Length: 74
Length: 348
Image (cartoon, rainbow over all chains, first blue to last red; front, side, top):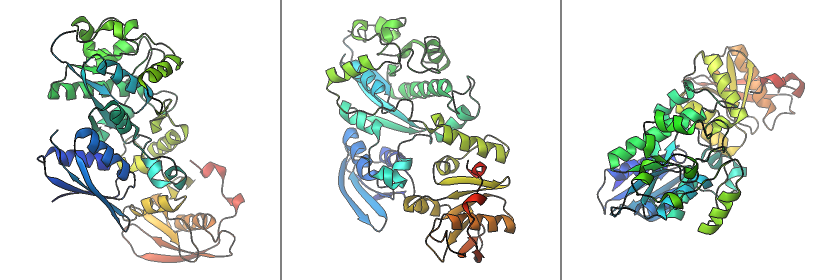
């Protein structure tokens, strides 16, 4: 499992960090993005949909939001 | 139309015009992908993430939302570092505030051109409309943007193309000029009609407000920062902090940033190691960062000011912990400043 630490970053920086990480991954790889900006609950799923990736789960623990996604073919 | 499917990259701000421009070209069978630049000064995100009044609004990134409506990929590019030169040294000057709109557009079209060349795209489209913006979208600035960005006739403005000389995509038949538009001026009537035709019934109306540099209050804070640090440089943290909290400068050598609510306090907490900071311990109240070199006397003034914004504002005394950068907390007992003691001139 690959991880990106996007804590304390405000949108769209967590999306940009996700995008940069995904660029180096292969289709089928999974990635966890750890965030604190609640905006990611909306932005990362939208970014994933339009770029062909799949958000598997979004979970919240304390003040952190963890977005778990699978890299798509596009 | 030529038989080879051509590819265009569209500058997507999240507003209606760039959305329409991209759709107009999609309609002509061109493969369009969006590009959105993050300068650090983008309005979206900052306040929505921090302030309760904004969190209650629907939360979305408009550029992403537009891309989803158009069913096209969107590439968000971090240009924070490179963009500094645009803000600090705009060759064409500033607009009403610190907005370097013309230089900004030239820079972004140039970055889009670089991206297009690296990714095998044929031309660039923007949602520009002649006469829409006083600084950057005028008949005389359109060729300046095309030339100084290096895009020349690979830059197509689908919403006003018929008012401009034919570009390469039109001459080569990649797009049909007759399917483009001749919109001019500040009226949004034609755009509204186009939006209706395309079935867009929900879109952002930034009205130039997607950049903090068009905001008078924000520009004042940035000007104040530059004046007191002695140069026009900045870091992303500065850009963010200028957006957060009340900024007051009681004395020339320091200013305070006082959180206005829980979300801002939480955000400011991330800067405790970098700044001398204060917080009340006897009452609830905001975290306060001190920017500048402050003496003990300055910090006592900052503590009294902070106490005024705490729940102990009417108390005789408030206990405030002061932590110098990298130091240990030191408690001060202070009397909150009275309203009359807080000069309006302190507010930046």
